[in-house]
Length: 266
Picture 1 (cartoon, helix red, strand yellow):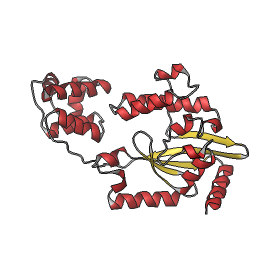
Picture 2: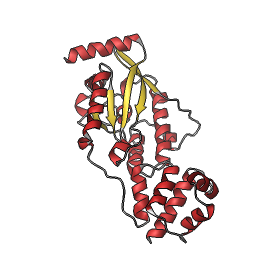
Picture 3: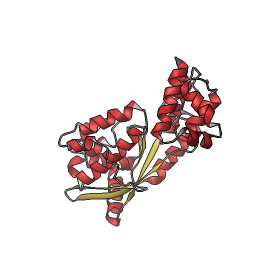
């Protein structure tokens, strides 16, 4: 049973990446015959072979562990709590958060849950939430744009911004077997007045290296471009899934507003 599970999983990941058995074999430096035998269950992989194939297929560490278990092998990558990262990693994140002030920086989980945020991020989050009490201790960075109690009433060109976010999430969900992404997509689509056609993936949407958005609440206005930083070569699942979102002011007015919000919070 374990062998058959891995065979199906390998075929699934290969098909998801649009590779033939020969293309996967060439990329992984193995024979196409061996890939064929693995997918048919006629051969059983070693742990090294599982990790080699999954790495070539761009599979995240969590799913690499799942592939190992499916092959009847032990998982390889630990998953420490996000609150107990390696001291040097925690120090690096803390320094990034501090140095990015007075502009927002947030540390997100794979499903966009905010795990950590600097004071600027919290100030902007609170300033543009319709109901600050609804923010909670662990807000979701995408739900901010969809929840009427949070940022949604103040997002400039909401339909355009929200549709781009949904399109990106659709792609991420299709490229991952992580149920948390599917659950997040369902939550976003369930918010009031979200068009029904957004339930279908839009592969025509083009994505640039950054995301941009503007918020306006009366005289209070900000605009940001957002960059995402990920750790290179992580060796545990938790670090592999962390995303650091840094907001940079889109204009001088935003810079001044962030400085005023920071001064007000001191």
